[in-house]
Length: 362
Ligand SMILES: *Cc1c(COP(=O)(O)O)cnc(C)c1O
Image (cartoon, rainbow, N blue to C red):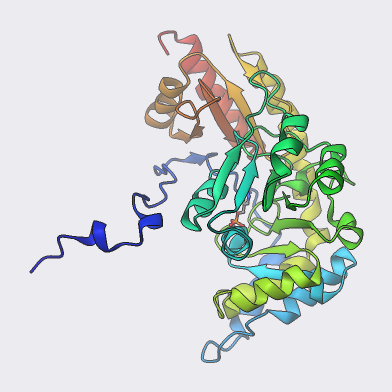
């Protein structure tokens, strides 16, 4: 007998969700997912290979990844007890909502932003309060956010924001901490691409309701490894430690991540290059007819172009260049998000865009 009533059997809060679709198509140049496309130095790759080769796979991982926690804690000048590792930042976002959300509680977000906040909140039966950004500047509405956060369990602010690229004004975070009682998450998945001093990790020690999310997926070029971490008050970390999937961070991920954190100085020139390329690409994009490009502190640029969805399809089909389409998303009409790649990739993107846009009938 086939299973006919699965829709009635599934927990009501989980009905209607669809598998995540990254809208990936194989292309020669993939600038669609904000990955770091720069090749890593051979010395770093050698250390990763060595770490994998010497890690036994027959033993369970250390559930809390303490060696990695210590490495991250030393880097950020905090105690191990203030750091929690997750299977990507995504797992930590889910676990935050699982722990601190729930029926009768709400999450405040400032869209357009990372969609997962809302998805995870819904899965955890947490009400989502959306305080939309200004349509032109794409900056958050600070007063409305603080107002909404007064009754909220959680606020999630992204800095730099995906997909708009702006850094949060620290004054807004200050207000959220001082004028509300919410737990405030600042998602810094892209902060390594912003100017020095942009991270709010140093604030955590004096602000027990502040939590900062980081990841090795972007600047560290390890999106496939699945490793993110949270810096927060030890009491928050204890809650997350108690409810997490015990072995979500596998032994290879832990071993490679330890090496990656130790090698961070060797990876710094790659970040510097991406930041320089970002400036070059922003200027070139802005010269396209009818283009609007928002200032970005991350490794991607948001660009509004006439007929963006068609442009994006033609880049993919005629030029084998993949970028992310946001033109369907509320507040992002005709917007594409392009990851900053290597100079060669950025050249390919611009040549393709110029051919598509200037060839007319985009
Ligand atoms: C990429 C990203 C993350 C984390 O990604 P993981 O690969 O799960 O670590 C978190 N927040 C935002 C806004 C992102 O873009």
